[in-house]
Amino acid sequence: MSILHDKRILLGISGSIAAYKTPTIARLLVKAGAKVQVVMTDAAKGFVTPLTLSTLTYLEVLTSFTQEDNDNAVWNNHVSLGLWADVMLVAPASANTLAKMATAAADNLLLATYLSAKCPVFFAPAMDLDMHKHPANQDNINRLVANGNILIPATSGPLASGLEGEGRMEEPEQIVAILEDYFKSKSPLSGKKIVITAGPTYEPIDPVRFIGNHSSGKMGYALANAAAQQGADVILISGPTAGNITHPNVSVVAVTTAAQMLAACMDVYTNTDALIMAAAVADFQPTEKAQQKIKKQAGIPSLSLAPTPDILSKLGEGKKNQILIGFALETQDALANAQKKLASKNLDAIVVNSLADDGAGFGHDTNKISFLQTNKEAVHYTLKSKQEVALDVMDHLKTMFDES
Ligand code: C5P
Image 1: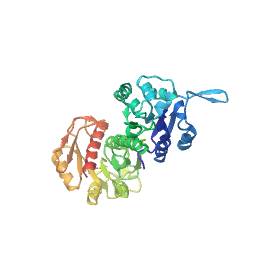
Image 2: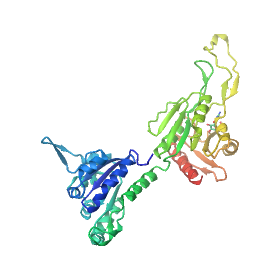
Image 3: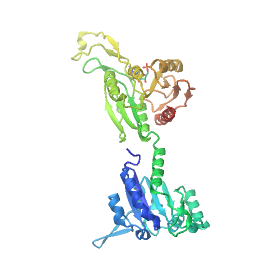
Image 4: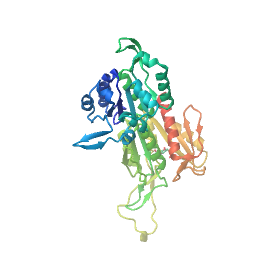
């Protein structure tokens, strides 16, 4: 799926002969799955028709502050347009339009929308070479860049005037590639399939009782959210928690026992780029689950326990190209113990948190971790919110992807 899928792009078209290339820009963006809203100036309508652009974008093209609907004027709300967009692209940006953008003039809908936009604004100047190199025009371009707008520089070549030089609008394919690169830089984990486990597991003793632990799942949920926000497709395999996650890139698989968590991991493992095992899997399970509630009148029962499957070890055994990251919650000799697990479970990295540290581990909103990788220096962090810790783990993961 293209990184442009579902992205909302405001395409502002001003009056320049280069406007004849804007249907191609609109077409390429729409083909990539973007939603494109065109706003054009009156001058632009002389070069390309609103009908062409509305047909290509499936949206009405906006050209003025109001629309006449059976004599009832309807206001085109430039403020909500500006808020709607993920990016605004002004292409072509004529000398006139970019001068007005640089001086906050707002005498048409495109300019008012530009001034209301909170998103990044790209602009692609297009004009004759002498207009382009005029110091007043260069001042305007520089001012726009200084104000945080992103310049798509004009290129050199034959111009409509018959002259040759700098002033051609960048080609549509290149402009679309620049937008793709922008969205990719905002989503460094785009295209990656990441599985994260979270929460405790419950191992049933009878229909009402279980062996479990105090895990809140907060760390795993923060990891899932961070990965999704950076563009990854996330499967969150979660034991019983009060956690809730609504990011559209996250699908949640709810499990109860270690055996179910193992099966859920195995189901998706082959197709996974990275798996982070943040769940606090119960270590023991009753060898038998009583079918009925065990009566206390019958005296204190003796429970026979067996180990749960070590999910991470099994995943480590079957590892192919996946990056496998474990968690280790230790009460003593944290680093040495974690180092042993890193090797014995065939992991690529392990996140260590020690219950000896105040504010770290179960139930807290904060955590204090060290990140251990084979053949690398351990990285030790201060106490942070679990959201910040998740971002640190994602930074390591990105480096691991880059190095793999
Ligand atoms: O061996 P220990 O439980 O300390 O290892 C911690 C790591 O192993 C964690 O990532 C945990 O999710 C995982 N684990 C597992 N299956 C178990 C026990 C722990 O995957 N039965």
